[in-house]
Length: 203
Ligand SMILES: [Ca+2]
Ligand SMILES: [Ca+2]
Image (cartoon, rainbow, N blue to C red):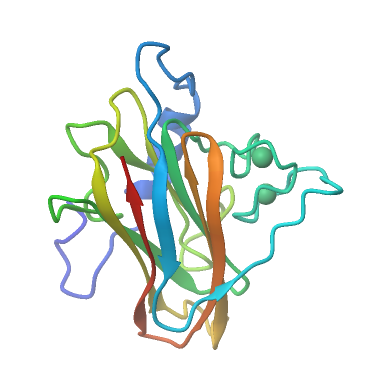
């Protein structure tokens, strides 16, 4: 449905997913053992964002766990679960988040969920569409079923500048595994660039 036009995306789609998903519970089933992080490494030229939990501050919707509770952007209308990858950016551009799992399956606005419980529950469009909550956020989470052991890769793509509000854009990416922050990174993107930012392994 999103791929009808060769130019890319429809105006509906992931944005409308958000309202439906907000009502979904974030509770992790107690019978599911949370995944654990084995390793996480930035790739390309991503910079690590220092994590300072000596003075936790109030959470804001910025892909950083400001209040240091292990949940990225709690209260922002998108969820966490057993695993969470969140991106935010600092211009009106439309940036897309891609996460590829151990089987080579990629989640993004083009594929919003997998049978195993991974889903894109927020897909921001920058200023490419009208009003939407948190237009500079993309969020992918794993609920219900334990994420598969193995390697995950996170990419970001500068889809478009929208109404001239783009230009070079700083993207922040955080990863939480088993409700612990695994890492937080930042990378600058130019229009059209698609960059692998981080690779992590869970078991
Ligand atoms: Ca938090
Ligand atoms: Ca935050």
